[in-house]
Image (tube, rainbow, N blue to C red; front, side, top):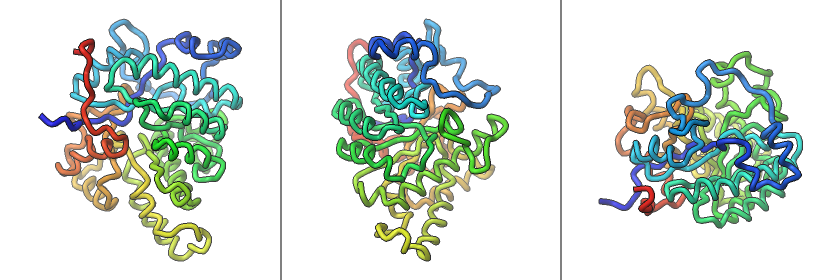
Amino acid sequence: MSDRPQLIDADVHNAIAKPQDLLPYLPKVWHDQWLAVGPGYSGGWYSPVSVLRKDAVPDGGGIPGSDPAFMLKHHLDKYDIDYAVLTGSGVLGISLNPDPDYGNVIATAYNDWLVETWLKASPKYKGSILINHADPQAAAKEIDRMGSHPDIVQVIMCSGSRMLYGQRFFHPIYEAAERNGLPVGIHPGTEGRGIAGAPTPSGYPTRYLEWHNILPTNYMAHVNSLVCEGVFEKFPKLKFVAIEGGIAWLPHLMWRMDKNYKGLRDQVPWLKRLPSEYIKEHIRLTTQPIEEPADPAHLNQILDMLGADNLIMFSSDYPHWDFDNPNMALQPIRRELRTKIFADNAIELYGLISKPAVSVKEM
């Protein structure tokens, strides 16, 4: 049997079981605030189906995604997943707390807790460094502090922001990520919360359905900004992962950017190539929630329009309500591309070239 991974899940949400679990990693001066308000970014929309799967509650009770052993049994072992890239839950929006010092210490505490609670639980778990993007200098130091850990594979921050991610304010983050050989991922769920501002250019949606439908517009704005501001010229080895933002929006964004670049390229003299070429080289997407057209053939056409089979990685979004079962997902997609999506593209991005050595404890 091949030692090469066959299935890598690029978006799995690990949760803090109870607030007290973070206290051993948090300076005492912040304990009362953490216990009182948690991450401290307000807002959000009511979901009638909740956010978490009700069948994902651990055997001992508690929050879905909070028990490493249960997740191994209920998700990774069940579907023969070789690696799960952990993306956190409940603290991803720490950058949107108005106090950047609080955001910094919570991010650091979370990362230390992640190593002790999850990365030591199984070699199948790979971690993402949580950063507070509201303080890029502190975020860069946190990336340098954690970046050499062998089970850390990326940097993660929320997609909700007061500024577009291509702007030079954020460049220290990208410099540190490139220095440590790590991609930067963003994850949705914080648009319109905390100090991020309205989630659309025209204000706030009324209901969860409306908010959820329109999330890709924020991803479009960030990708457009990253390319046009020259981030990938300045940091040529950087990869940027748009997690859980869909896929079908990218072809028409590339077409529009390329068309406008031809007429307006004097405004961006630092760009040496078409915008679509930067996107194909530097942007990565995850599948969940992949669009599901009435005619499945249309999905393959969208992927052909992207013209880059290396862009997309499988993700389940476990244990969220719109979880994708890897045994059922992506069936309309042509076989050779499914193989790349299920493992090959994540192997290349994260360097997970061989299956994990499973301990006797896990057998």
